[in-house]
Length: 156
Image: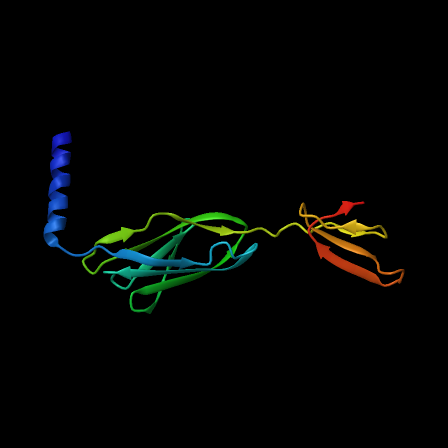
């Protein structure tokens, strides 16, 4: 049984090679990975040689048909929501009905960073490099609030 399966597989592969044709190949990947905070348009581009004019982006297990915007260059824009890291890959068919796909790539949507603490003080506070802060205090005895943005505070 195993020998028959191996022979069938060999013959199938031999007929594929005999039929000729080129598999689609992928290059010039580009995306806006890591630029979104919570949501926004995810943008993906790729160049596909030996394709039949159709390219698919599978993002987080959902297929999106790419637009062919210039020769062998394809793009997809997806409205994305939810911070996290998501898998995606491209696949395409050739004019000889051969297909190929890329390795899995990952796309990260960042979460909203936490707001720094707001501190109101009449005391002498100086910044250091430990953590973000916003400092509110009166300047020179005036009653107008003064805001200073910095990294952290050290009490002296």
